[in-house]
Length: 411
Image (cartoon, rainbow, N blue to C red; front, side, top):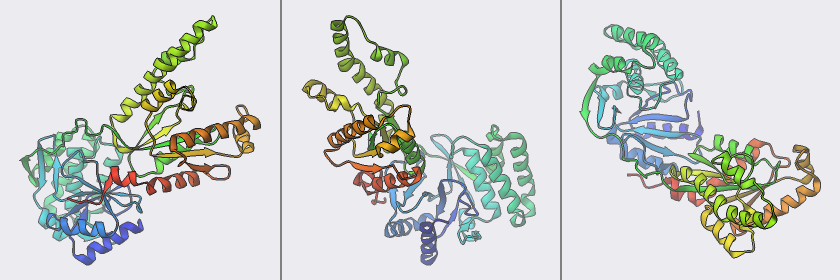
């Protein structure tokens, strides 16, 4: 188990804060989050302990009002915490577990020393996760987990519950994943229904950029591969934005065709180039940004390249136009390698001379867009994992992460 989590659970035990796991009951790290229920009267003390241990609350509101997300930069996991055993069923209806107090008092320690619900409570609460789909679309893994819990906790079940458990097993084998109404009917005796709005109004809530991280570099330096690696390893929400002019990433093949077209005679092509530089490409770049910006207020946006030639253009008109339409990065990484390594990685595309020219060219672009504050990473002798870790470390040092994505203010 993650050492940060071990410290957290030890602190909760020492301070007598009542809690138990809401999934992954044996602490086997089956998912990317730790789902917890904390007694509502312990919320203030629980959040006080989180602050003391260096945890932050996620700024992005959860979709459901009964979920609270906390994050530790030293940890690789989120805490998804509920202070009531309530499950949203649509936007304005919910179901609350009727045996909350008994479930807390009956909680038992698992093999890792973390409290989980007793067998019957574990099965019913996990089944409620599936019935009300708070975790989203049902997947085969959910079927496996509920089957495992029924099997593992048989000894903790009473004879009166045998019919209910048999019904759950039939649903898993015959009704999963579609017939959730049948599952809700089986759970109804154990939950009370309330009319309460359970969903935040999300209109325009995610418009904007949380943090913008730009990757620049020569062919063969590992830009695309590293962006993928950072996206997978960084335990914060990310979106990708491609602002290069290569073969892929255009909003339409027709736009790429128009932009790459050449006309004759030269005077006509010159006028056409003006149109492409001042209308076609700016419109294309704005269209690429719009869908990303609509959902990135609480995300780190990983930007792959910018049209550096236009930013470096000495003509004020073109320079100002592209500065105004391109996002200003909060962090700039200049990725490079020795010319010999670049040629070895992409021998069909690189030569030693071209690699030297490209390294100097992209370094100048990095200096310009970062006001000289770019972070250079030589990938010549680094593995993808090592380079990604170095990038993620720099991201966590940025104040933007804490100003825009996380907060120490708990309420």
